[in-house]
Length: 463
Image (cartoon, rainbow, N blue to C red):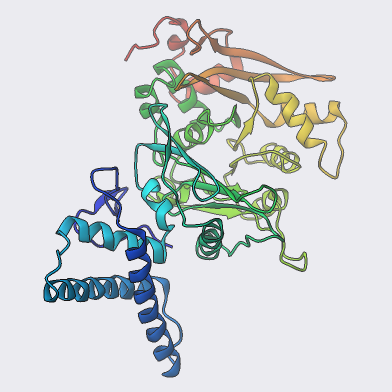
């Protein structure tokens, strides 16, 4: 599946041609007409495929199929315009024809009526409770109900099955035997859907507005200040292993991307996710040696499944400089902690936790799910040896801010000991608090960190 469509009005995002979003500046094409043209083009594609197979050439590659689809759409629109002129009917304007062409292409190769929402850069989240109860959340915090994304729940399920077959590293099922679907869309958005466990199929899409982001960008967004930017940058250069935690939609993935941007391009990164989302491998100028691994569900016979924990173990055999887990939430935590303490310093993971201190109990809870069943004291000792810093994000209204940074100092029985070197001020933003350990500070100074930044807690907006 691709996000390209070669029509007038296309815009470029991250170097990829994309159709201009339908943001309400014109009416959406009539769906019956879209479906009629889709059926006509689909018939043409079928004829071309059969002709190739009869001649022994095999099936069309997806890119060739889409190129032929664009050609067939243009030809169908030309025939329709000639028929309208001959019958004295009104001919579509160039703008209307462009919207219609995009809608037909979306119905054939993308996500049909859901695509118009994905193409709107102002939309942050999309939630559909069935085909016609669709809510979107905009980047400014507004929530609105919008039009249907399919003609029926059955059409919605079929659209999701098609996306599952075409998107990602391997084909994913979506049926009553496998009623959940989690995948990364071509634009980097994360889609999750369920069926058969609710009265109607439900879809949730998390948009990532910042696929390529730096810590400097997050200063402009008000997420952190100069002192914290310099600390996080020094942690990456000094290869300090970090856990990034926070609640849902707190900005964990965005912060991880921003911190990873300061990792040397000479380092080999292995990213591990349940469904691809980080997208570090998309930018070879930043991460030229990056391999993205994605967990896989078992097939109908229960074979071929690959868990996150297994992928972490595989990653250690792939000569990584750092291992990055997109979201740790199970037994893979133990494998990750072992990886962090066995030569892959500077590794990272995101974690759901309500506070920076709460990250330690979450790690212990997940670690005990592993087959090794380590006791709490052993788990805490492993955490103390593997994790150097915990960074916590919080939401204040629509603002996402780094609220706390903890330096792990050791383990004492049932507790992981730490110093909160940055803690939230009255506004919720993290400001310098407890001092770093002297040996840690020396390591950070050696890679260019200015310790004087930790002495200006009031300088949030100092540039």
